[in-house]
Length: 357
Image 1 (cartoon, rainbow, N blue to C red):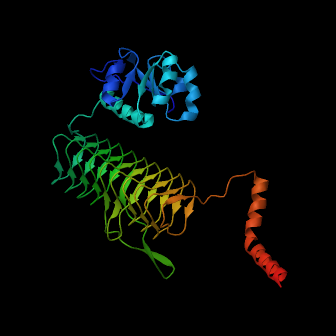
Image 2: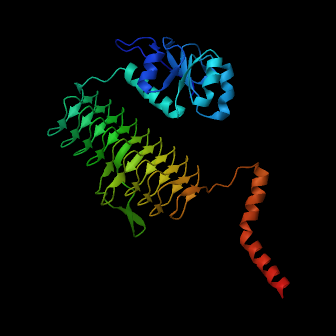
């Protein structure tokens, strides 16, 4: 984690919080003085007094020796090292998960929550249903037949199309778009600039030109999905494009029409998925990976960054398709050799055949 998360100054927020309160909120075992005050979350190497940090990887254990953190979240085997530095320890089986939960608790406690209601500058069409606990920000546009559920938050300048559904507890950050007939599940999040329900890329060739195919489906997004800034999910041509529950999409991802992404799959930035691909559950895709259209990816498949998936993958596992980086001269020599691989194979077979006679 770079830098740190300082205590916010919302109404009624304290500038610090006691360690005992943090431990109780996280369900972690506190070793040390619970009355010590914490003002920020930060990385071990940049920690200052009143910082709480975490150690998730054993290879970084040496950082404990120089840290000034007041408290460190650690596993049992590192607790003694933390106490030896004069810091307190929060002991847990999974420090990284504990850190994640700490950030959410911290943000919920100290960020100023949006106020329920509709901003006067919002444009709300007739026939829209908005729960009284929802928050609609400035310059939002909501078209007819849309529905916005309990506790939903719609940030400034968002657009919600005709008949779209924003479910309970969902959030659209500023300038995000949920197109007509699209569904955003409970507690799901769209970050700024995300566009859900733009037209899929469908054109029929005729007489040297392209004729548009209208995209008549929608986009169905399950519960607890998070979609990053400037990511696009195209509406289906006939049936919906489907993003199942718990999926996490990073920034600048393109999901084409009629794709289906299985539950709890995660994709890093700049991934591209072509039309009608079927991706399983609990998969991961490294940044800039590309998946061709009409392919099937099994559950629990993990694709390395910048790999191009050109055929279906039907067995779980780790897959890579990237030529390793090298200095340019060596890379060009290896690339030239690869171009001759088929010829070399044929020559080798001929030599083997000759030597066996």
